[in-house]
Amino acid sequence: MATRSTAILATGSASTAKLFVAALAFTGAYVGFSAYDTANSAPQPTQTVTLSARAMPITTPATYEIAPAGAGRISVGPQATEAGCAKTYAARSVVVNPVSGQTVLYSWKLARWSPGTNTWDTYLVDYSGFAGARKAVAWQPRITGNPGWYRVELTVEGAKTVKSQRFQVSC
Image 1 (spheres, rainbow, N blue to C red):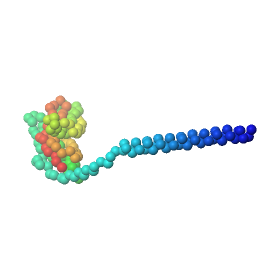
Image 2: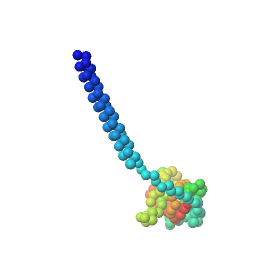
Image 3: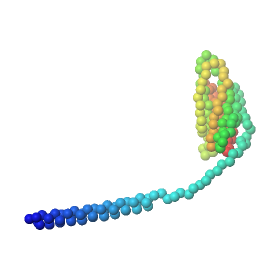
Image 4: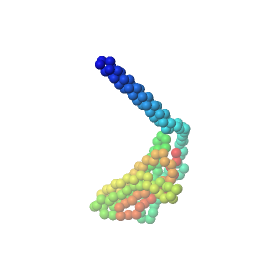
């Protein structure tokens, strides 16, 4: 009886061993195919492009002014040129409050000319206000790495928007 049990165990162990080897072979083939497929889907190396820039002076006058009748005046000029293509401008004007005992709100807007749409697009904005009869207001917008034509707009609550002349920023 011992030999019969041994024969069954040996046969079962042999079948288990064959099944284990077959499973390992299948798993190895699957992993190998999966790795091969993943290697084929890896992105191809891209070409490296080197860009360079050089500093160029502003080609228009240092201060730009506009004085519409009865609406005030904005003066804009370069304040600082920083490394690369970063420039800070100073915009100044005087805001007159029609009701000196109440707060008047105003906003600055730096607009950039879009040649594709032939419109002035908003680039930067700033909001403020004060209580009093009049105030000299100033704003220092910073333009970084975006050459083109710009203008500054000042909108006072209850009044027309005052716009500076356009000025060109170049790098």
